Length: 147
Image 1 (cartoon, rainbow, N blue to C red):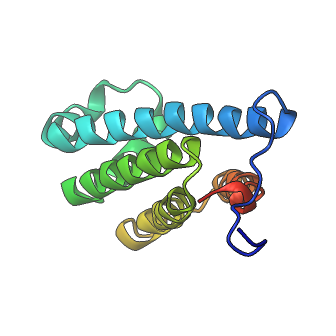
Image 2 (image 1 turned 180 degrees about the horizontal axis):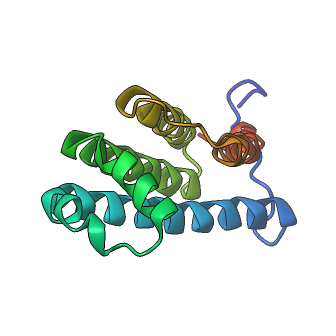
């Protein structure tokens, strides 16, 4: 085989760079799994949450939850869907597949945009943007080792 046909070398399994990839994936599995579960459940029982807002004792939390619920059931199902895509992307990244990076990145960008599209006056938390950029940057460092 000549140099152009040989795959890029994969870092040593015990090396710190693969450990970082695995840590990023595990954190993504947890975050995306919880997002899929919570947004899916809220989407399924949206009416229950809407009708029981008065039970939330803290007024600021009640207003925030009311704002989120005003987006409607579709918003929650779309979030659950894109968290599932994000989870699948991380699973593919775990398996060293480049397509996982693209799935993960696209779903995370859409997850940032969805609240802006569905909730009038929604303030985009800078923390969400920062964490998304940090994870995409972290995953991008492994692209040269992936198929």
